Image (tube, rainbow, N blue to C red):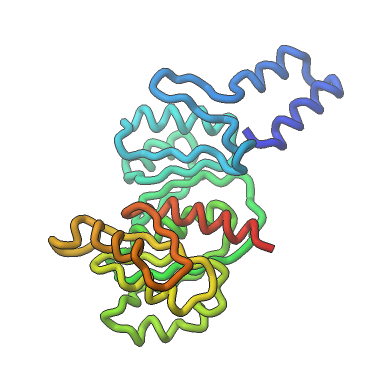
Length: 249
């Protein structure tokens, strides 16, 4: 539940537009609502500024639909990650305004416009890394951040990355995403003066170890200013980048 909705409810009660029972009914699910299989955190927006995000992987479609429906009663904007087209089709029955980015595996309901604040740059080493990159982009845009992208610029063709050096030089925060050896991330960090959020992906052959190899490369970056997310965690990167640029002056 957003702060604005709570203030509206309290003002309506103060001005006698609603009675005490109606006000209590509106606020009854604070701070969370227990559905047995899920406890919906309606206070998340008050504490963190953004509503709870639904992670779809491992949940059944009926569970996802129920969580979405209850969140929708209290939150204007809702985001889901690791979502399939089947989930999207089920949610469209509840609200036709839901948006789906199939490559990112993300769904969003946007009923209240966020004020645009800040810009980030997303650098992706290869086309195979785009699902993670698009998840990061979708997340940051959901949070009200403008996103610029530079895709398919891995170190196997270094001139491709250097061709975008002006964007890297001027960026306020960069999400750099790479599988294989992960070398694109410390290379980007060596060109930038802003925070770098590295995201290793599971893209690669056997010794890539499902993303462990690029993870270790990024953790051992010689170039300073690199923080590292978990493997394939585009959502976490987009969320962190949005917070960084929105809080910077």
